[in-house]
Amino acid sequence: MAEERTDWAEDRTMLAAERTFAGWVRTGLTIIVLAIGLQALFRAAEPTWLPKAIASLFLITAILIFAAAWREAIISHRNFTNHGCTVQPIWRVSLLCALLIVGTTGTGLVLWLL
Image 1 (cartoon, helix red, strand yellow):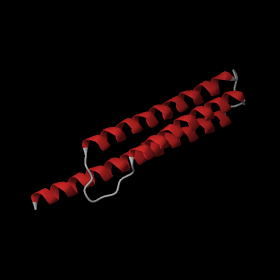
Image 2 (cartoon, rainbow, N blue to C red; image 1 turned 90 degrees about the vertical axis):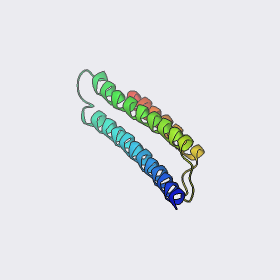
Image 3 (cartoon, rainbow, N blue to C red; image 1 turned 135 degrees about the horizontal axis):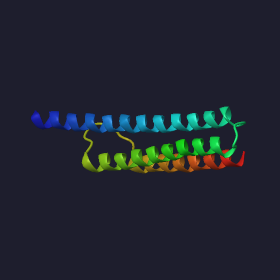
Image 4 (tube, one colour; image 1 turned 30 degrees about the vertical axis):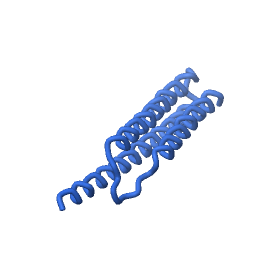
């Protein structure tokens, strides 16, 4: 009975780690929206590079958040074993993080070209 409860606790911990990963991704995406909004709002400001530089700082922050989320997801997958729950495979988490980082980098390039 105690081993079964431990298995359930480990499953709950894995699911909590997935929710935390989702929170990190939401935070990163929100920062991207903030960067785009700031760039749009202050586009006419002088010097013209200043809004782009500030937006770029936010985009770099989003990239760092996505990288940290990926790292923590890898650690969680290595430290716990799922018993009855179904969690996202690590390849899917890695692919999502890679696409988010590439997309954020592309967004930064577009902002500088505008």
